[in-house]
Amino acid sequence: MNEEIIKLIDLQGIDSEIDGFDQEIKGKEQEVGAREQSIADKEAEISRLKALAEELAQNQRDLKAELEDAQVRIKDRQNKMMQVQTSREHQALLKEIEENKKLIKANEEKTLQMMEQVEEIEKNSAELANLCAGEKELLVEETENVKKAVNKIVSRKKSILERRTGLTPELHPGTLKRYDMLRQKRSGAAVVPTKNGVCQGCFMALPPQQDNDIRKGEKLNFCPTCQRILYYLTEDTEPADA
Ligand SMILES: [Zn+2]
Image 1 (cartoon, protein in one colour):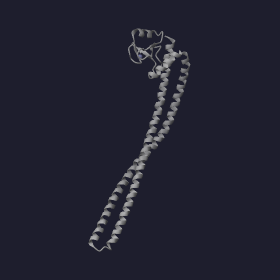
Image 2 (cartoon, protein in one colour):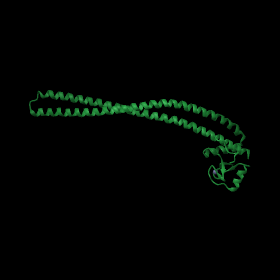
Image 3 (tube, helix red, strand yellow):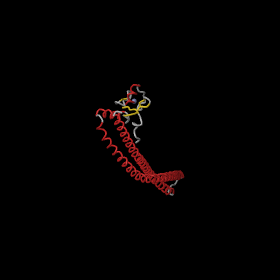
Image 4 (spheres, helix red, strand yellow):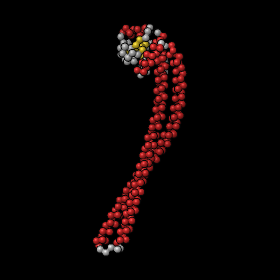
């Protein structure tokens, strides 16, 4: 088989392996990113709950002030009762006292409801804070593990990159340029095998004459449909598993 084809198969194997490493690194970084996002979401929810609790506390203070005003009004009307002469005036004061008592009762019910709400909010907030603390511990651990894993991948990648650097000068610059362009356009697969006369990149059947040429492997062959570089898969050309 043509030396250039063998080198291209080798180069494709190397680049696929590098792509795999990059994917692996990305996946690990995404795991950490998802954990960070989860923590950020919980922290945002805690802030929201805190603001809500503050709002409710302010409402409770307002209600307390209203309640105190109503109590003052009741005292005032009760004092006036001693001084009024007519039964009409007396009735009017009684009515006002009754209205203020109703206001106080409604006010107390509202306050109680709010206290329950605040309690619920504080409970939820504490649960979230707990979860957050746990996740932060995990994040530290995960970040450390990912760092180690990425370092391992990077050193594996480094040695294979060295192989690549040794290989590329042996290829014709035009071929290399074409290879790089195909890698960009065809999701990283520039060199693909044929199987039973079918391109394994785009799965279109090849003209029988071209299939014969590919089997002979004397020159570079390109798929007429996807333009990928083709080779005939034999035991000798089977790329080693990454
Ligand atoms: Zn093709």
